[in-house]
Amino acid sequence: MKNILLIGGSYGIGLAIAKELNNNNNVFVASRTAENLSDLNVTHIPFDANSDTLDVSKLPAVIDGLVYCPGSINLRPFKGLKIDTFESDLQINFLNIVKVIQTILPQLTASNQSSIVLFSSVAATMGMPFHTSVAAAKGAVEGFAKALAAEYAPKIRVNVIAPSLTDTPLADKFLNNEVKQEKSAERHPLKRFGQPEDVAQMAVFLLSEKASWISGQVLHVDGGMSTLLVNS
Image: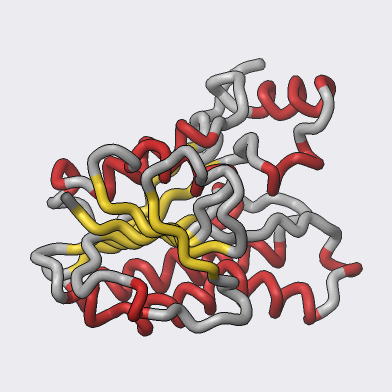
């Protein structure tokens, strides 16, 4: 069985990934809380990506897969954004990834071929109003992933999933009533917003041997939003 480390895995997409991986892998969840994990056969490691350094002594010598889940959704007009918002979005969405990967790089390279899965956003590809801060941070993730994939091929595969709005606690304020849900669904060519399982299944695929010839890619799990223009 593979050793898979999830940074964040107690809620939303991370929890959905943990559930998908639960029975066939050794799963380690490094997160601030173990809430929602009690029914899963996973090892929890208390960890705050913003303030902690990952304790490698609690991890196996070989890590076959890493998924970094923490993120933010700050949607506000550019003129009202302070530099602190850009810095905090960059920290949680991107810079903490660098810290985690550098910390566990020996374990990743000890695998025959490890897989890193990161998260971007449809907003990094599409020009969307009020997304300047998060789009900038997610754009950094995409550029970093491609460069890292090139540098560590064929030893480490690195791919990015770029979802559209997905029904998670992070997105609750955008989907917390029927009107918002209907409007969000209508914006997508496939006429629904995302579910955590939609994204989790792509992550599990990218971690698996079935994706062993895929690296340096940004895969859009977005209901067709980034590429399809359809008549309403």
